[in-house]
Amino acid sequence: MNDGQAHFDPAAPLPLLPGHSSGGRLERVLRQGRFAVTAELNPPDSADPRDVYERALVLSEVCDAINATDASGANCHMSSVGICSLLTRAGYAVIMQISCRDRNRIAIQGDVLGAAAMGVANILCLTGDGVQAGDQPAAKPVFDFDSTSLLECITTMRDKGHFLSGRKLTTPPRVFLGAAANPFAPPYEYRAVHIAKKIAAGAQFIQTQYCFDVPLLRKFMDQVREQGLHKKAFFLIGVGPLPSARTARWMKNNVPGVHIPDAIIERMEKAKDQRAEGKQLAIDLIQEIKEIEGVSGVHVMAYRQEEFVNEIIQASGVMRNRQQRRAVEPAATS
Image (cartoon, rainbow, N blue to C red; front, side):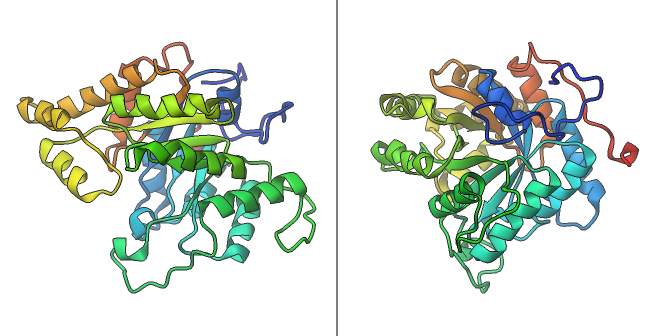
């Protein structure tokens, strides 16, 4: 997972190549046509940096960048910008998620500059779940932007070199911009149209919701290719292990946009070891998804199961021809 350098530092900026928006490794991997792997770090309910480093270590061997979530589900955890500060300082490549729910355009533009200054090369732009979805529904939502207008804002900062006010930037943020897609939520026929708007606004890579229905994903990717979107952005498909059939049923009924076919739940129910079967299911899905034209990588999510991410990626074989090395231990950094 390195570029032949003597010292492995995935967060260190690389030379800005022609046609690249950042000096980050994720963009370089994707533009070189290699199958990319990103993974989601579940943020701790803690102020201890070791709780972040412990989770990042098991991910760093098997992914090109680690997503730092931004109060997903409208539940408060350690902030995305805080996690990015810790991880970039320790030598990790990160994707900072920005949700529009909690901050206005003034705060967000400042966060973008701060993140870029820390070495963040990738930003995922999200509208964010409504506060009623979380455990503090009395919170006041902001939604000054949605994900599309947020993409337009950061693209303006990067490519035109000024704030939305028109005031010029001394140094624009060199960042690779992403957006989220959900091919598994109806109306299915408009999913590609919706993501085309985000790409037009500046999205360069797309991370999707969990995929448990490969035929439905194939139909979505057919639409993507028909519109030529796979030539304008890189599609990373969301996958993850199911711990049990009971959890699968709960997710199907309670998590918006997560579609789990009955056949998958039946497979889990019949398994003697449902946890092991859920892990094998994720491996099988990655291997099948990898063969779909237009797919550039996978985004692996495993809530509180980071050790499974490592095992799943290793077993899937998608990193077989990539050198895998751990980032520098945080304790060894100066």
